[in-house]
Image 1 (cartoon, rainbow over the protein chains, first blue to last red):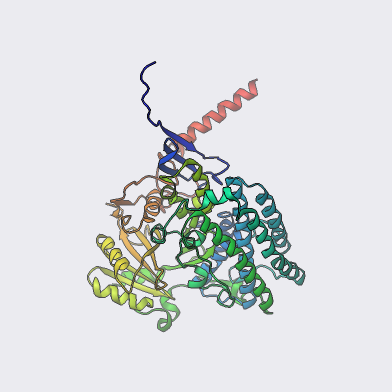
Image 2: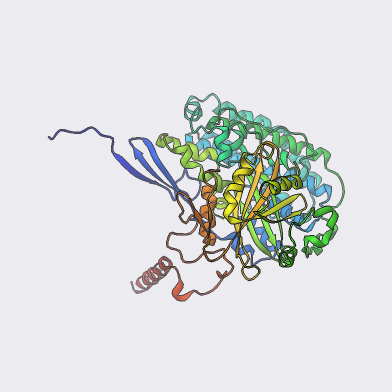
Length: 397
Length: 179
């Protein structure tokens, strides 16, 4: 035998594109030194369907079902986001009842999405029971969705100017019962997980991201709030009925996987609280704005009302003024279960969007994976992917 | 701070470099010269009172046939401290399609700029790793440009890998029929 030189062998490992723990088609190329990750390069794009390009060829109403397919775990929030952007563009006032219904449904979608997250995240780390429990509870919410919208995952329920159909008392009763029972069920998960030694060892102090870094990397949602940054679209730029209900935004302290998990667990309770308030405060009235069926795109922001809307135009150029008159643009965002979901729409006064841009939180969160993984162990990659909660459909659009 | 005040402040600092601005509803968009974009964004990020520490989004819009500098690169900024947003736009012509990268101001710009390059073909000078992100490495053309067709038979221009795949599928089918 020759003298054996004891060195750690460097290894390149492909994780994905299809791996049970990557929650979709995400491929990570990991350069390892022993068990430590030296470099992590994510590759996305396997699911790219060109939603932005497609919607340039469809009318605003036809684009709505496309937004379902972005994030199939919380399609309701995506629909609401898109509708709010178009409403802002054409200046429609949504009736109060529709606003409350949308808020209620958005929170239901948030609970559903977080349930899938806790189920798969726990499964990745090695807890099977939570998966079964969470799926059981999600089922009862999906049934409620089916009752009103007729669909379970891709709902396409909100409309520009309101919602498609009204909710009945049977639905409200069932939902109220759910919100009464749900906090108890969350406690069930917590008893299963919180004192689990394996769980604590694998999440506490792992994948730490400080508040400054989190802002620098553009994280949103529970992933950002886990680092202790207070930012929630629902509080900062309230849409729908969020300014009429009372809720808190849970924030973490250390920015590790455990804090992100805690944030989402506390959000469960807040969501249930919001739904309960929405049911109690639900006003009577129409569910669709009167002019919603005859939507017309604004010809120009200049022609609407000079005093209120336009402060000043800092140009004398005739051509530029004509150009500004032709194109209107709007950015509206909602708090999806994953973070800030923004829609940037450029309108050229026709019935089709000239350009629709989706600012997807998962896209940003997938970008932060190298930062989280480099320097940690291979096993922590799984926990890290789970903790930022990415949906690849939304990431690739 | 409301959008009008922000605009005033930026206008005072960069009187020469602001081309125009429009306020629509509660949103303000400022169009600036592309040479100064990094300086202006750094000013917005670091000035107390403005504190735009959060980059929401970078994207581009193609105004083919409407305006001469063809592309607009659009930056959405937000301040978590004060809770205000602003939209900055820079015009990029088709010839010399490049603009300064802002990756050293915000780390999140990295992926957004890569996507923008992938979809519009805009070069970001100073970007550490400018590769395609959503499309395959050897893809022809930039899908979100207006002259890229939504549906058509590309014929010879078809993506090589896809052609190979189609031929392989055809051969496999013939084999299956024979046996």
